[in-house]
Image (cartoon, rainbow, N blue to C red; front, side, top):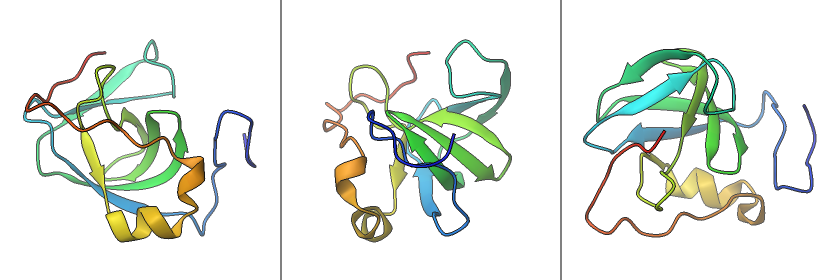
Length: 110
């Protein structure tokens, strides 16, 4: 889906790319689709750099190091992927939910 939806979705666009870094000690699961029930493709280790091309709620579509979807933060607000702050703010922040700060815990609740 392209364009901006009511849920704050920013559609895929070649001009929309934000780098991020996996910060959860347990890594980040990459799935085939935006839903948590879609097929698991890979698990990226902590410190992996990712290239994000779309964000839907707390889920992000990535193009590198492989294509797929991952969670930016878990259901408790703990950070899984930290987006490049400067790029994040330049890309119309009203369209991105800001995660709550992680309470010293990181993990993946999928």
